[in-house]
Image 1 (tube, rainbow, N blue to C red):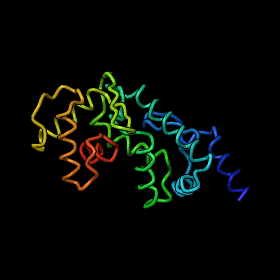
Image 2: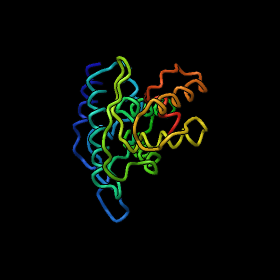
Image 3: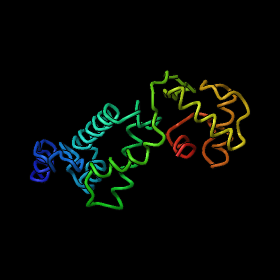
Image 4: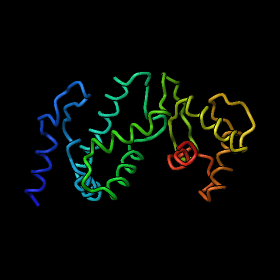
Length: 193
């Protein structure tokens, strides 16, 4: 077991290139991106330090993508790190040999069409003990989607109003979710993805 931990740490700290940057857009992968899914699944199950290191790597990878991708403020329009790590888990359960960098790249590619292309003010939403912060543009998208479903009939303005909350409650009810009207990650994923 100690050998496995040392091997994982060595992989995380590895600085060698997977492929040199070249005309085919290959690039050098660093850190946790080299890890196979089977190690990610085990680290997540154990809630080990490796899992938290992977989470930090994923956040850094997303930040770098946001910095260098054209017309991108944030590729994650609402997704939390925990939701992203859950999506990675789902993929890794079915594909234990895949490398994390390929999994994260695939997720980024699938989210790219719905990215935020410019900065949008953030809105704090509090419902009892639950709190979240969403971009105003994300709330506008929620309202627009709920309008398309016939659940919302008010201004599509990016403000989290009582009408928005009521429409979310109707959507949650249709899915047989707990009807809180709170824009939690699962509700947003089902609505916007």
